[in-house]
Length: 161
Image (cartoon, rainbow, N blue to C red):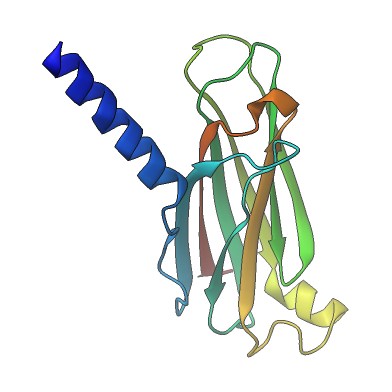
């Protein structure tokens, strides 16, 4: 009985700690940034946004972003969405459907990219020499997921063309 109680208290402590953990980040980075957070879905089953910055955009480069959103417990048929923005401009969303491979976790991943020369041409001064602020948002389609845990992460790397 003592072991079960100790184990239960340990799980509660870890869950409470994870819910209020500060996101891990290498921000700001010179040519890359890595960000990860474990948290709980907020009202509307929306994740707390995570963000990171690459200090200075450069020409003849592409910004590549790999993003992952893993839902803890989910209901069959749930849909998870992860969206990436750079300097306020959406690069799109990755959508995953949770069909029951496991009742404990559902993961959506996406690779996004932005041609920094094209972005600079479209909006002069927005990229060359300017910080590249990458933000990831996401959600579950099931409003009953409010309070459920998720893990969100992305890596952004500025690479030569």
